[in-house]
Length: 113
Image 1 (spheres, rainbow, N blue to C red):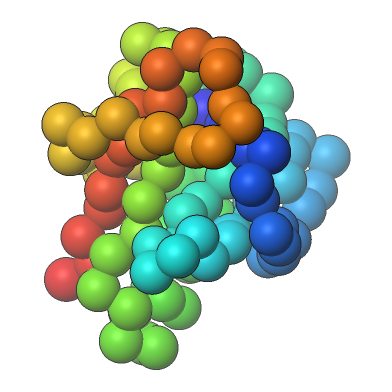
Image 2: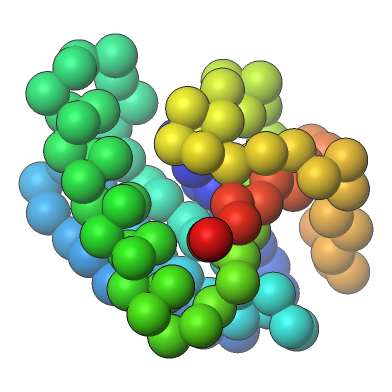
């Protein structure tokens, strides 16, 4: 799903929402606010609608705090499709992390107007 990558250099992951379908976590990485979502991958419409409500609530709360955008880091085309479905756009940037030698990490961003 959106930002399903927990990295070696993650200094803090703050759980902002958790239920039986998954967890929503945020962390500050340098100057970026990055979202991580650990969920049941699904095409079930009711679960996707639930995810949308949770994410939109988070986005509204971030906007109220004058946060202009949030990033998501993903590894696969499927994760990119989920992120785009929830309003993220590819930035064209690949994330390089010291000590990480896994698959390419792609960055997406959601601008919070």
